[in-house]
Length: 95
Image (cartoon, rainbow, N blue to C red):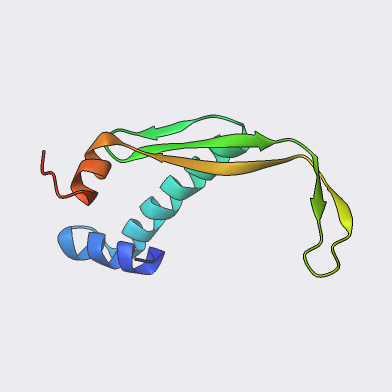
Protein backbone atom coordinates (compact mmCIF):
# COMPACT_ATOMS: atom_id res chain seq x y z
CA UNK A 1 0.00 0.00 0.00
CA UNK A 2 1.30 3.43 -0.88
CA UNK A 3 0.50 6.74 0.79
CA UNK A 4 -2.18 7.74 -1.73
CA UNK A 5 -3.95 4.37 -1.30
CA UNK A 6 -3.90 4.84 2.48
CA UNK A 7 -5.39 8.33 2.13
CA UNK A 8 -8.07 7.01 -0.25
CA UNK A 9 -9.01 4.15 2.10
CA UNK A 10 -9.29 6.44 5.13
CA UNK A 11 -11.36 8.95 3.13
CA UNK A 12 -13.72 6.17 1.97
CA UNK A 13 -14.20 4.91 5.53
CA UNK A 14 -14.75 8.43 6.90
CA UNK A 15 -17.17 10.08 4.49
CA UNK A 16 -17.65 13.03 6.86
CA UNK A 17 -14.03 14.11 6.11
CA UNK A 18 -12.82 15.74 2.93
CA UNK A 19 -10.03 13.90 1.14
CA UNK A 20 -7.76 16.96 1.39
CA UNK A 21 -8.22 16.91 5.20
CA UNK A 22 -7.42 13.20 5.37
CA UNK A 23 -4.31 13.85 3.25
CA UNK A 24 -3.23 16.62 5.65
CA UNK A 25 -3.75 14.31 8.66
CA UNK A 26 -1.76 11.43 7.12
CA UNK A 27 1.07 13.76 6.04
CA UNK A 28 1.18 15.33 9.52
CA UNK A 29 1.48 11.91 11.17
CA UNK A 30 4.33 10.86 8.88
CA UNK A 31 6.07 14.23 9.29
CA UNK A 32 5.88 13.95 13.08
CA UNK A 33 7.34 10.43 13.00
CA UNK A 34 10.18 11.65 10.79
CA UNK A 35 10.85 14.68 13.00
CA UNK A 36 10.89 12.57 16.17
CA UNK A 37 13.34 10.11 14.61
CA UNK A 38 15.52 12.96 13.36
CA UNK A 39 15.76 14.14 17.01
CA UNK A 40 16.77 10.59 17.98
CA UNK A 41 13.46 9.85 19.72
CA UNK A 42 11.68 6.50 19.60
CA UNK A 43 8.14 6.40 18.17
CA UNK A 44 5.92 3.62 19.47
CA UNK A 45 2.53 2.76 17.99
CA UNK A 46 1.05 0.20 20.40
CA UNK A 47 0.15 -3.06 18.70
CA UNK A 48 1.84 -2.01 15.47
CA UNK A 49 5.48 -1.48 16.35
CA UNK A 50 8.22 0.94 17.26
CA UNK A 51 10.42 3.12 15.08
CA UNK A 52 13.87 4.02 16.35
CA UNK A 53 17.27 5.11 15.10
CA UNK A 54 20.34 2.91 15.39
CA UNK A 55 23.92 4.11 15.06
CA UNK A 56 26.29 2.19 12.82
CA UNK A 57 29.94 2.76 13.60
CA UNK A 58 32.45 3.61 10.90
CA UNK A 59 34.19 0.58 9.44
CA UNK A 60 36.34 -0.65 6.61
CA UNK A 61 34.23 -1.92 3.74
CA UNK A 62 35.07 -3.42 0.38
CA UNK A 63 34.19 -2.23 -3.10
CA UNK A 64 32.54 -5.33 -4.61
CA UNK A 65 33.57 -4.40 -8.14
CA UNK A 66 37.29 -3.84 -7.52
CA UNK A 67 37.85 -5.57 -4.18
CA UNK A 68 39.49 -2.38 -2.91
CA UNK A 69 39.11 -1.55 0.79
CA UNK A 70 37.09 1.63 1.42
CA UNK A 71 36.28 3.58 4.57
CA UNK A 72 32.56 3.67 5.40
CA UNK A 73 31.55 6.64 7.58
CA UNK A 74 29.51 6.36 10.78
CA UNK A 75 25.80 6.70 10.08
CA UNK A 76 22.38 6.54 11.65
CA UNK A 77 19.77 4.21 10.16
CA UNK A 78 16.04 3.81 10.81
CA UNK A 79 14.94 0.63 12.55
CA UNK A 80 11.45 -0.85 12.94
CA UNK A 81 10.49 -3.49 15.49
CA UNK A 82 7.05 -5.06 15.06
CA UNK A 83 4.57 -5.09 17.92
CA UNK A 84 3.04 -8.27 19.30
CA UNK A 85 -0.39 -7.67 17.72
CA UNK A 86 1.15 -7.21 14.25
CA UNK A 87 3.37 -10.28 14.64
CA UNK A 88 0.41 -12.38 15.77
CA UNK A 89 -1.77 -11.22 12.85
CA UNK A 90 0.99 -12.00 10.35
CA UNK A 91 1.29 -15.51 11.80
CA UNK A 92 -2.44 -16.20 11.68
CA UNK A 93 -3.11 -15.76 15.38
CA UNK A 94 -6.10 -13.53 15.98
CA UNK A 95 -6.13 -11.67 19.30
